[in-house]
Length: 322
Ligand SMILES: [Cu+2]
Image (cartoon, rainbow, N blue to C red; front, side, top):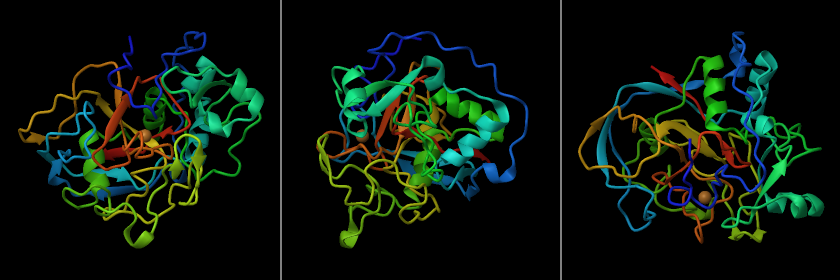
């Protein structure tokens, strides 16, 4: 695999094309067959499917991201989790299987510089184009800011530093799968047509915060007006019309599809994306997004990363056939 981040990746989705010496990860051989306890897997919401208008052509669309053209997509019924997979759920998977994530096997993952103490911030390499990310040795889902960190106070937050490959391993254990990009967008739109956010067109109707993004001035000052500087609990803020929480903001969410941008306007039925590629689709934006540089917390926005990449703003939710 040869990731090519320059034309496909947004500035809040750093690719593992690595400013640090990178060892090959240990192969994925350690997922056991043990079945999950029922409470270890998010409840799945039935989505009736049918036709919807996918994508966005309006002036908010980010050139090169392939948000448009708007096209009619018809989906069979499916199920999708109300929330992103939590730290507690991911911990249950790891406890049952001994699975080691790619962040652990590579030995590092990307952490936002502003979350790091001075010495760690200084010693951690940064990608040239996105210097607010630090490649932190020892950062992974259970130590999201690196060595000495813990998730004890955020078991109900989304698991982060999860690569696409890690997410697929979790799905295999839990008997679910990743949503296709079309399923993700259908569910995230919550029954509304052509709107910018899961609740409508206004970011903060009546001044009410509805999602966890960067507030203030990126990347130096996050006022956390919405209540959160980093991740929020998966059920923070009200759900959309289909019962899903935090599809936009909080953490980027992996989809099953390989990334491509050359969509056509013809109608599609149950699209699954290209057969091959070098990066996987991510949707929803994250607590790092700010409209001054990354207006990707809209429901039609999209970006991608190589499937081995993780970061402190990258998680997933799960789906299943109906
Ligand atoms: Cu962003």
